[in-house]
Length: 538
Image (cartoon, rainbow, N blue to C red; front, side, top):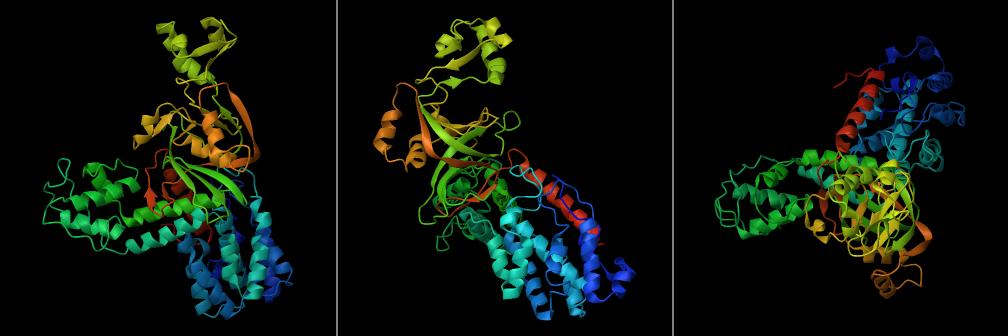
């Protein structure tokens, strides 16, 4: 992912005055602003970012006949807004804040260069907040269509005229409830990052209650700081890993995607030693990804957070109803990763057949058939058409499916969201897998922990489908196709930091490496901004 940046005029607005043409500096202010806006419109852009900003300056200033937009008071208000960028997980330096503050202190308000620079910075900030800074898996076209409904130019113009710049910022924030929750968690962990955070000692062996652990007091303080133990919890005896510490460790382990057995081992200590500053980065990346999501509007919404191995089903826009939350099994890292996309769940199949994908047939079923000719019969599988040979299967003239029943890999219900990757949600007879802390075990589809509850969620607005009728449909019987009255959006999402339905901040490992890729993409964007504005690159 490469950032879409306006090289030249737009990104050079925050540079020193000597970077601007002498002819521009000598022009009357409106004429100079018109020149700067024209230069911005002509600047080439890399077409792989989420928006195209070249025409924004001209659109903004044309309506005011290229008169300056900012006076010292409104400019100070705008810079205050940019200083709040870290609350959104954004970097004020991306908007030239330091240079703008220096210019304002030097009395630059009213000059063409300062005025255009501040306008460009505010427009980019609003756009970044609305759709993100880099192109996502969910939006492959330029520009992002959401900037038609939220036009940064119009929002800035009206916000400035009404003296309500902060309202323009609030309107740009994604309306998802999770965004506000993660933003609050980001503020919490920024505060935690100001506290001393020395590394805890790694024990030579697993520590259990009653065992000696030299850093027991420091561990207690760490768990209180992170909220996994209450502030009034009794401190442990010197050097002893107590039952109270175990309870706090269990809560910590559960929040960090680990087996919550309370055993203090090297992996748990390693997680405890991840600093709040590192967690801040994870939370900021989640905010960026939430900005990528389409506008779903009110109604049912299902989100699968892959690294957290969790599914949330909620009524978007309704904060009163708590979301349905459950554990999931997802695609195996490196081999069969679950792709990120937004689908539309359109129907359910109770007691479904499992139509074995060609890739699984070739890599798994055919080798097993070579070793055991009775494999299909032993696993309730059959060929289509019936009686097809192994040669037919190899040649693609026939396929394999598994009949409904207790051995069926999809369990009792399949939730279908048609897509070219053939990814869907389904139940599973392998219930023991949900007890594992690492659950990337599927070929890419999503196995859900509570299929009956999810079926009730998606069918709940159809009066003919009561909870009792759903339970009846889940019992062994013929395959039943049930169309949804309205499609339900389903998001395959990726966040290594999130907030669960109980308000707990949860963290997960970067199992597919997407965090690392996003960090690189954002760093590349930052270097481009710095280079274009004449700032040194870190």
